[in-house]
Amino acid sequence: MSFIGSLLGLALTLFMLVLIARLILDWIVTLSDNPQGIRKPREIVYKITEPVIAPVRRVLKPVRFGSVQVDLAFTVVFIAVLILRAVVFSL
Image (cartoon, rainbow, N blue to C red; front, top):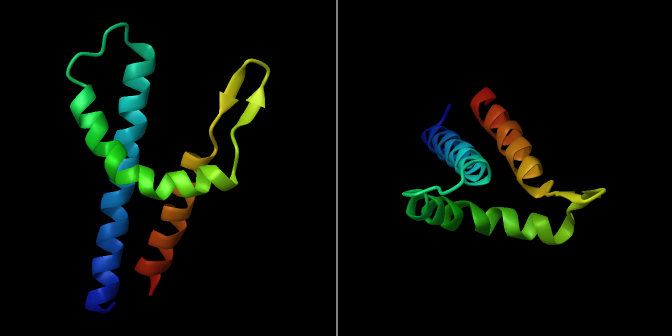
């Protein structure tokens, strides 16, 4: 694998870890009554991931299941990162 391929693979791995951090922080906020100390890390994670997720969200609208809305943009971006990472590391 070339240096550029290794660098791209590392960047995709780090981005995937930030997506996982976003998922965990969102669940903490959802399940916690008063999540103290989560606001600043959550802002940082959102600043990193939102530029990638927002365009996908504009194309792929949230799906409604009764009174619940499911945002599929995060899932699509996460799967895309997994596939791209697998492709880059297989080269």
